[in-house]
Image (cartoon, rainbow over all chains, first blue to last red; front, side, top):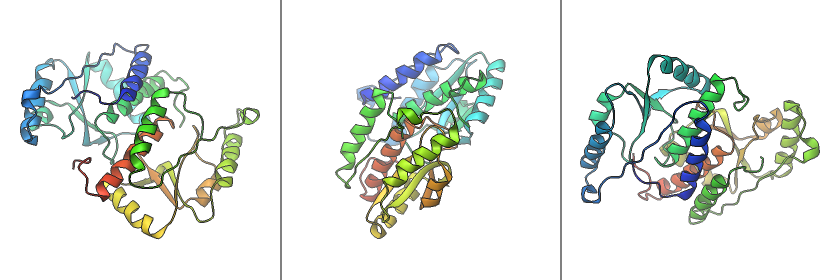
Length: 149
Length: 149
């Protein structure tokens, strides 16, 4: 959710997106809150963001939210999880929310909440963390030498 | 330790370095292992990296290692810690190691080990995480609206 303000984040994201296509069919979408909805009310903003997310999720999608209060994996555990879940599910959807987190309706739809750190990072920077970690995860699954224990 | 291979990391780092100078005197140094030492032996590599680190640390520096097995803070706790420690210490040195972590001699010199995540991230990407978090930490200390709880 939300346009990237920093060119370096787009560049890094596209670098790892390219690498990812060797391992899976990968696509990313960025949505922006229409200007007329850019209110100052945080709950209202989260509700409108939620509508956008939910409208774009298929009923068969397995939905993973990147959320501070989610489950903590290390890279090996995450790779094992993705390896297992991707044999059971045809489509995994990872959602990175806006600056204020998710509306309750998005939590209700989610199949897993995944935490990246106790630290809060800018939701733009999280895009980079996420995509490097997903790439790392596939190199672990394939036994490739990117990841050092 | 180690040159950045991705331009986007340098760009992001320099963006947040610039912002940081509003709050503190900040300087960063990157060291590269001389080609003749680029052996295949991991322990040997870590020893030579350690020599480079230790040679460049002053006895009065308060040394914080970014290390997977370090202490976990959230952003508020980290801000409180930095706020407190910077009244006691004149110079904080944060060290991001090479791809294989640190030699024992660096651990012995360290005053704190700080973990960013259970996940392993590329030690290049960690530079971005670190500097955004340090910037966030100062905005928290100053009560500025960058950080959302």
